[in-house]
Amino acid sequence: MVDAILGLQWGDEGKGKIVDYFARNYDIIARFQGGPNAGHTLYIGDRKVVLHQIPSGIFHEDKINLIGSGVVLDPVTLKKECDAVASFGVDYRKNLFISERTHLILPTHRALDKASEIAKGDDKIGSTLKGIGPAYMDKTGRNGLRVGDLLHKDFDEQYKKLRNKHEQLLGNFDFQEDISQWEEEFFTAIAFLRTLNIINGEYFINDQIQKGCKVLAEGAQGSMLDVDFGTFPFVTSSNTMSAGICSGLGIAPQKIKEIIGITKAYCTRVGSGPFPTELFDESGEFLRITGNEFGSTTGRPRRCGWIDLVALRFACMINGVTSIVMTKADILDELDTLKTCTSYETNGVNSDKVPFQMNGIDIKPMYESFKGWQTNISQIRNYAEMPDEMKNYINHINSYLGVPVKFISNGPGREQIVSI
Image (cartoon, rainbow, N blue to C red):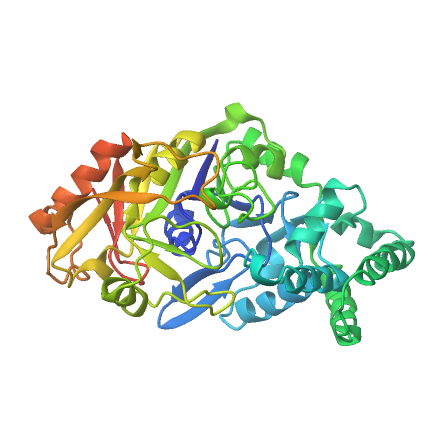
């Protein structure tokens, strides 16, 4: 049996904490897509840790953590993360497994990513410059190197062949950086990666499911960044939605049961791209400062706005979401008025559907307003004790989406989750 936790917005919904919270109920936590552009933030005691590639169940030492074949893996980032995890006293060598079909991010992928983004000028898509896009391009172009290739004696030859191809492509850009240090770090990390548990991930996970193990599939980024259904071209390079679980882990659709969607109580976005409910006033700045809305991977200030129920219902539909966890509800504590976007007005026409192309058109969000609860909810552990104004807000969202909010996160701590 496989359940999934997915982001329903533009990423940064707080999936790391939620996966960590639910991990106790599962035997395997598996990442199925994305790369080091993901940043899943956890608080272990009073210490903060950001995981970029390792599944967020790693701090449960009795759980298996699998990096699936749909991920693109940066060995340098992985080594740094393993060192960080080890500093908490966790033996990652015991419970971290990597699929041999997982594609590798090379130093020249990072160089191509940076050179391409610089060349776009004002048309930048907001890449994190981690090499994600070029790595996925090599994957679909059938040129990429995979983790399993590390175990073959001709790996260095394969690497040089792909590097030479990339260097030819870099010749089309004005890119002058010396990446020799990147390459040195890469081969140090490659030697480290060879010492980890490299497995045939598809047989492994299906064998475990056959034995009755419960799997939690952990998504990265958010549904509105899906390469097919997100706000193209301002999207990531992988399928962030539930369909990506099958291709990213090698499991059949009928194995998937629950799809748990994560949304903030408001909305944020990092980088470029359409964002209908973005706020440019003091309310937006309040959300940014109070919610500490700065990218966990890039440090970039996040754009902030009211919750977009049009986009959220679209995300619930394409993912088949069965329940919702709402994060950062406590950030709204001090606001006297809250708003939800329930439709878009474009050229005088009102619609409750996400259009084919959101970029380059004037979308006016149409709002419903609600009285804020103006109560500190961070210490509440029982939904019955939540203020009535919050319950009204939640009930409105439930009704609009047709999918229930079943959990509310009211603080960064592991224990700050209230079930409904």
